Length: 442
Ligand code: PNW
Image (cartoon, rainbow, N blue to C red):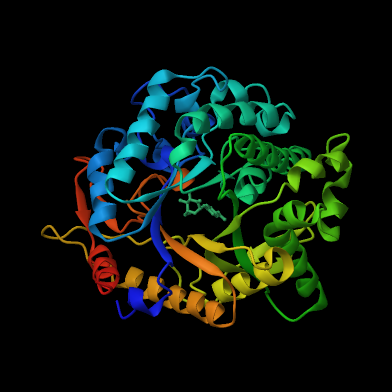
C-alpha cells in the first residue's frame, strides 16, 4: 500500500466497520427475532434464503476479531448494537444482551480500540415490525427508549455514536424497492419511513445528550448521480435521484426541510403534523459520516411510478457487486457535504470498500483489487482535505467477510476471509497491506 499513516494528520483515525446482524450470529444468546429473519425466510427475497443466524459467530469469537483490529494497528471500530439483542421484543431489556455489549466495549478499550457505535443497522425486532415498524410514528419513542437502555449501560465508554445507519436504505431500499426487509413497494410507506427515521434519529440524539454524551453524529449513504445521456430528461431525473438519495436526509437534519423535487412525490403521504417534528430532527450534531461505494447512471423510465427513473449500466470497471468504481465521487461528496450542510463540523468516511469473490488458496487470499480500491479512495480523501474539508477519519467496510443482506454470503467485503463452514478467519493480503501502511508511523 503506497499510502502511509504519515501522509495524514497525526490525529486522523483509521478504522473498520461491521454491523451486528451481518457478523454476530443472531441465533446465539437471547437475541429476539428480527424482520431480517422473517424476510430471509420468505422464498425469493435472499440468495439461497440465507440469514444471519450464525453469520461469522462474532458473538463467541469477538475477542479474536478485536485482536485482528488491534493487530492491524487500526484506531477505531465502527460496530452496531442490535436492538433485538438488547430488547428481544423491542421494548423489554435483556440483561444478557446488555452484558454482551458491555464485554465487547471493555474488550475494545483493553486493546486501545476506540468504540464507534451505531444503534440501528437494520435488524428491527419482529414484534415492532408487526406493529408497522418504521411506518408507525411510535417508533421514535421505542427507539428513544432503546437508546436510553443501551447507552445507559455503555454510553460512558463510547468514542462516538450515530443512531441510524443509512436512512436511504432503511426507507427507499426497504419500503420502495422491496430489496431489504420489510420488502415493501409502496410510496406511502416510504414517505412515512423517511420522516419517522429522522424523528427517531433526533429523539435518540436528544436522549443521549440528556445522558451527558457527546461526539454524536449521523451516517448517510451517498451515490454520485450522473445523467445517462445529455438529454434534458436524463439531467432532470439525475437531479431528482440526487435529491432523493443524497440530499433528502442531510437537508432534513441540517436545514429542517425536505428538498423540493422530493416533496413533489412524498408530500401527500407524510404523516400529520410532520412540519412540527423538525425541532427534534434538527438537534445539532458533532460530526457527520459519509458512506460511499459507487456512482449511478440515471435515465427516465415513464413506465415506472414516480420518481419514474431507472439505473443504467455504466462503462467503468465494476466490483463483484456490479458497482462502478468511481473514487472521484468520494471527493465530490466530501466537498459538497461541507459546503452545503456541515461547514466546519468534522466529517468521517464511515464506510468505503469493495466486494470480490476472494478465494482462499493454500491458506492465503490475495485481493490486490481491494488494495487498489482503498488507495484510490484515500487519495480522494486527501484531495478534499487539501482543499480544507475537515475529514477526521476513514472506516473501511469491512473487517470480515459477512452476511451481505439480500445477496447472502457470496459477496466478500472483508480484510479478513471467513470460511463460512469452519468459521475460520484468514487475513487477506489487503489486511497485511493496511497493517504495513499503518505501522509505517512507528
Ligand atoms: C451498506 N444499495 O449498505 C451497508 O451499511 C452495509 O451493511 C453493507 O454491507 C455495505 O453497504 C455493502 O453493501 C448498502 O443497494 C447496501 O444501494 C445496499 C445499497 C447501498 C448501501
